[in-house]
Length: 464
Image (cartoon, rainbow, N blue to C red; front, top):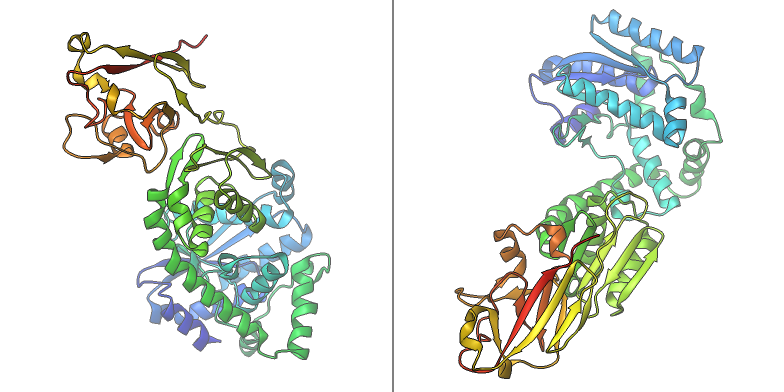
């Protein structure tokens, strides 16, 4: 076992000399083997060890005996012991989680507290190659993509500030190696009775499905599944930074959810589009299924418009088919903004579905000198009727008096207009050209000089 353990640690650079490593020990074979293996390697690796144990409050006297076993093991090797007790059933009931999920949440919260308190620099858990294979097979059975196939990574963040602080040194080691190693040391371990309970799907995969597949189809299946996880993880590491670089060019995050530049998204390959939507759901903390992503993509690519709702999101799309609006309906928050796109006559007073009313006025050439020319549009240069709609990602505008066109998003930022306010910020178009934006000069090339003109004014409607 030691060669595979040392090789995996070196390959993935899990430790640095001087690291204080808390080894998560449940008392089971895997965690006991990890502790014994790191004890043998600690001088070579230059690390200091302690023992970490969480009593989950589930298995009564059996869990108490596990706790005592781990405490005795820590004492045998003169190691510090970080011990905590939690009530998993209570947490499961309060948060409406499965016992397995509740236990995992509390376990990693315990690890995070240890790391935040500087009791440890790293926490090492005892996931093995067998755990990796079982996880990949479990996710295939339930349905997954490449991100799910990546399964258990060599390390994970404990929090945004504690990156790669939870490590899995045994992921390259099979369980048979673990037990052989412990037997060679005459080292006992504890057995968790729940690990053989067939009501748990993972246990049926471990004790029934995997052995059957190995016996009848592929004797090296565990290694093959672990290799698949490694390939998928490398794919995810490659794609992650690429999607991140493009994300802000396509997506505008708001308190209401997000707005996507529909045209730019549609230009991307299918795989890229899927990943942008997955990244968006991650940002919004909204889990999404394959069907959910496909539903959203169909709506974008089908040139549809209007408002629809599906199980995981509310989507609004404006009539010129550029913006894609997504909001989590299960969470409290501001109501979704009302998107609009409608004709704008001259003269008229038009109340938008927001707090803004637009008033358009025809100004004869004889009266034009009374006005600031940067507020007047030349009537004979306009393609009528005008249209008014909300701002959309990708919009560009050239205000009179400025040097060049700019993205409206940048102009909004310079004028300290919030992301939420932008969603319903009115812009007026002549044909496909934006000629007026609220609180900005009229468009360059459309200013009135000595001819008939149009004045557009925005008035905020007082909320009652």
